Image (cartoon, rainbow, N blue to C red; front, top):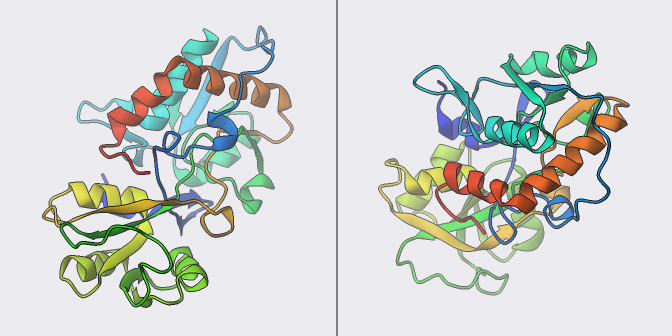
Length: 281
């Protein structure tokens, strides 16, 4: 299994990883106000769908991975199972390498990809998406007991803020917190160490990676979140959706309906609490 911290720094986009940011609880992980607050709408017909063939990727914990017993599990996997239960259809969930997922959809080898695939200009040229089922705004973290309370442009004036060099997070800081002393670091690990060691007053970055770092042994529980999350799409993307074959509007509508039903039932929040240890908003 690959290092979790590397995964929590990224959202999948094609073959590469792109910086992302996150938060999770003003509206459940901020997972798509356009979906999370949506009504379920008219019930579509899915009598033509006896089973749902789902593809995911095997090594992206806690979203999709093999557990110690060799069983495919994770937030995405359990969400796919919840969708199948809502539709009362058989669920066939298989894992494939990341670069095979979209080609498998295009070749009719699967019906849907539930694997934290980012909704982007590139991916929208290859597949269609449901409404987003999560997005990942950015967060500030500071040393516990630092005395830093309010997060605002005025409050952070002249504060030293660690951030990963060249990331969307750095661009956001430079556009909106230009009175702060922005301290770019080459890697996420070095930025976190800058905060932990006291070289920086705050750290701004991906909320998922920060959440697991704050809760993990590497941080020595030094730090805590400050303020709320930031989810501006221009910097942090349009979130994650379930991918279906281009033009498969019928299935997309069924999956949008099922997602809304899973949310309305409370099952979505249960999965959030199971896989993510901190409320991030």
